[in-house]
Image (cartoon, rainbow, N blue to C red; front, top):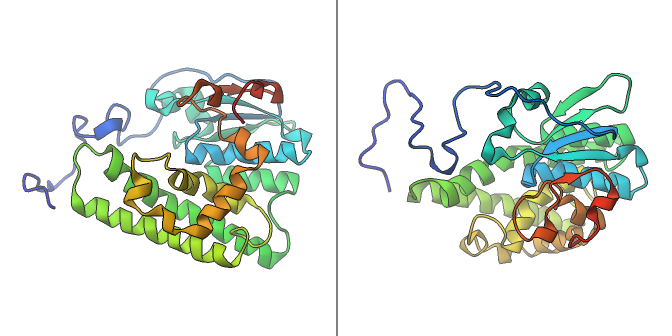
Length: 284
């Protein structure tokens, strides 16, 4: 259904009063809005994030590396509450000019450097530790294809379906139907792939699974966008459900999903992570 009261202007201007749930932080400009440094710990990696689907990619990867015995992957994780605009402070903008989580500071060598964008973080860590990314060309290409498939599909699920179904100030039939259709198509692509393969990249668990899992699992579990699981008939994607169940049982995934989480039960939240001891008493 179209909005009969709206005609697009000849030149668009920002209307901060009509932006929905995130109107107070969204602007059409980039850069820092407040001067504030970020905290730093003593571990080789400093992660600044929130336990959204994109943020969880990085914490799962770091926890999987530690689970696999890569002690050099120890990290400090600090919560960046995007609802409060922390991503627009000067310290965060220095390590991610795009003001999105997650962002990583690699202090493992002589000269610290930044890595931003979740897929870039996954590839960087996989190559650094030689883990969760095949080196044989065909296998690597398959994993990288599914990794960047997620990079391309995420905006349709989150900024598309999630926004118009759960967060937009008005509910209109066209955008909800448009992005519901695309989200279901995305699930069908994954379901058909997982009907023939244990994991998205093939027989082995890789960064392709770590990237896609945080986006698809909450739908299967009914933990995202209100009643989206029922609305989208997610139960029909049996192969995705099997894959989600297997990955959810991994100890590193259980830990990674609660790092920088600031909602839900208290024993499922970990605002900061500095060592394995921080998980004591948590529901993992």
